[in-house]
Amino acid sequence: YMPNAVQYSIRAFSNDGTATQSDILEALKLAEKLGANVISCSWGYFGNTDDVISRKVRDLRSKGIVVVCAGGNYGPAPNTITVPASSPYTIAVGAVNKALEKAKFSNFGPRLITMAPGVDLLGCWLDDSYAKCSGTSMATPILSSIIALELQLRELTLEKAIEKIAATSIDMAEKGWDMKTGWGLIEPYKFLGIKSTSKKSPLLNLLGLLFLILVLFKIPTASISSKLNRV
Image 1 (cartoon, rainbow, N blue to C red):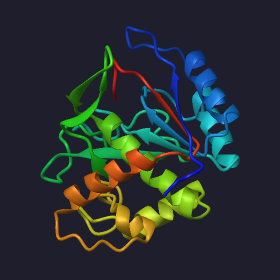
Image 2: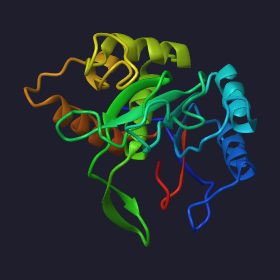
Image 3: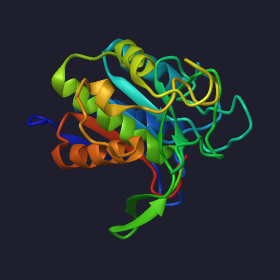
Image 4: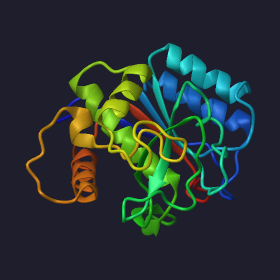
């Protein structure tokens, strides 16, 4: 239950799905000004981890704001995680399919932290409509919502969030962390310290909790994304 939460959707991209670093920087600054505790970034680009955007996410982290980023959809080539997900001051999210396997398109590399469902999920689309979409952009807000719910229960920093992800996620490949799936599939009930009595599959449990989060979601957050160019 999140009685004091507010969700902000901040548009940084134009109708053709493009944005400049200046556009994105202004959106991040606005999210900070609005008091966001979590910023969900379903976008990314290839660049260096010391550019103006990377410096800004480092600044946000220093102020206790958790930035969650899509890892990108350029897999299966290794070391393709985009900026700002490649920054050590963000949480990089990859995508799994309905079989709870790494989606073929999901980027991976040394900065990948966790995985969440990202294939054929219903999402908002153009002209106030909905469409099934796939991408790490679909996985990212799932983790952002779980972190937002955790913040309603107790204090949480970027470092604490990653520690909890490492301790509670479901291994997918090698035991512990690995470059292709990070710490594995996010397990929301364990992450939140909530006992689940359901005997359904982990994916159904996760999506069921996501539905609950969407219904009750009111913690200060910001979603900065493009409807046309999901990463």
